[in-house]
Image (cartoon, rainbow over all chains, first blue to last red; front, side, top):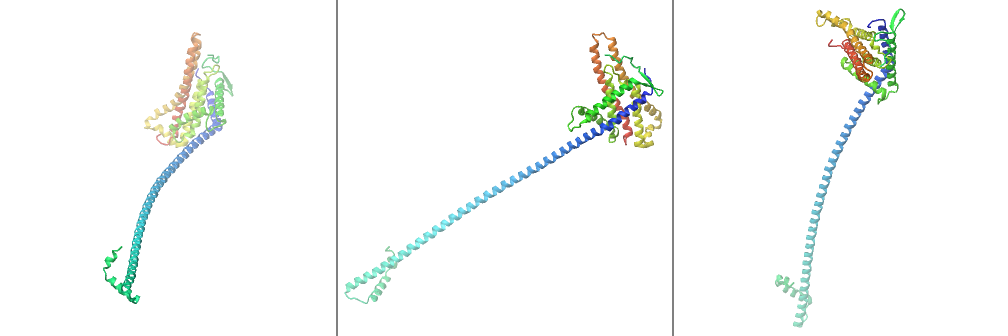
Length: 166
Length: 229
């Protein structure tokens, strides 16, 4: 039942032939395919990794830019507020100055008007007085000497009192 | 469960150049070789990046055995991986061939199993000598102490014997049982037991092919590893 014969060597040769055939036609290709696939998968993973880190970098950048934009917007708003405030102050100050100037001008005008009015009245009074005096005395003096006489008289009167006429 | 028609363990012999050959074993070996070649060629005929069909199956075998070989032997495994993967596929097909009515397993002949075992031992010594040199390779016979020389020699002789008899015994026992079930059990009971035993034999076929391959791997690893003997 168990007997050894040269079949043993034939079997070794058979197996070596099989090994040779598979090595020549099969293993090279399948090993190549498997290592190719391995390389490809590894490559894909690496690319994915790289892309993910690039995306993260991009995201970080965007966030930074966003934060920057926010800060800038804040600064712009602050600046605008300050400018507006300043403009308001300027306008108010200017308005006040204008107001004061106008007031002063008006007062000056009034003063001038009063002075002129006083002068007019005085002249009128002088003329009236001379005319009255002329009529009273009934003689016509030299008009210029008369005017001086009356003007001196009036000047001697209390200036304050005359000013208070108005 | 018809079986060849001849008694188990007896072989059809032929004389060639004065030598006797077991022709049934050789025919079945050729058939097994042809099946392995056809399957693997089908598998790599159109190699695709995403494997399908035979390619997937074959790559699974290559990955499984190749992975085991790689983890046992290490960086030098590329040299022997094709040998061991071929060995596994050939043994698997051979073991299963005997389960097909009308066929026998090439591995039910001790000539096959002992031949393969001796071939492996031959590879062990050739690769060991090539890789480590004479002293480096045969030095392990004197370890851990020169007194261990006889034990180491016995171990060296036992290796091909245990390797070949384990496979041979398992396969021939399986085939004998198939015939016994067919011959001895009542006809109404036979299919159930037969199916159970056939299923079992399919698993035995895988396991024995795997064991033979893995033991060969471990023997070869001694010759290919640079460190740790």
